[in-house]
Length: 322
Image (cartoon, rainbow, N blue to C red; front, side):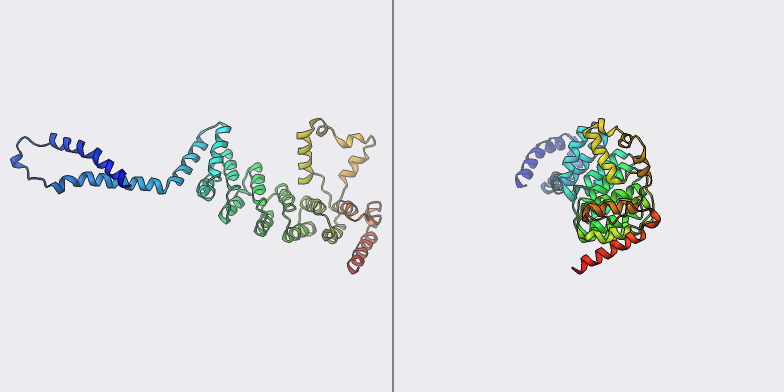
């Protein structure tokens, strides 16, 4: 810093002296004499200002970089350039938080999606709260990206945030949240999935919760699945888990994904069975996979399944006593 100031003095002193001599009036008798001290005030002030400006740039260099990279990212339309600036912003962690906050509020969905991608790389509660806001974005792709980014935190706080979001989301997005909860291997996650499977008002979300319990597996989910056996609601669509499997199949083998599997059944009974599969049947199939037991639930008529459910409960209670 001392060397910098000395250099600036040497550079500025000569030009300032020449300028002062050129501006000296021809009749110096009417001009008050200037002391040596006064002649140095202006260059010293300039040096001080330059040093202050230099210090400000040094202190806030990261903030300046972040703002510049964000500006460049939003101005370019080249995907590779955008990914490059996103990578640079991600390397700054929490210093990029103001930029991410601005991006997720942008009118352009592309900028909002980059904001979500940036937030997914930033640690801390502030980033989690911003991701939570993005989870209710009007754009489906952005919503799912934010849900995915938030679920990757895999903490107890994440579980509570995602569970609270389910009440604000449409059924499809709520199913996606439930499908992500199963990847968070915490007791609180299993508790939330079990609660949703038993009592969520939407049949599709309950169907997804039953699918997620099957993915979780183990004895811990058996009691909840038995509680789901009386659920006679029918969900005809794909759960989030089924949709993800279909999309994965389409990316690996498009010719298989394009084939209607139910069409292989010439009688059409496969399609009819799928259209009448209740959530209770989903739970029974999952229970059979986990325990190897069925007690004739799937074979019994819907109106005559109560004794079968009673046998399930009795069997589960006996297992608990062992």
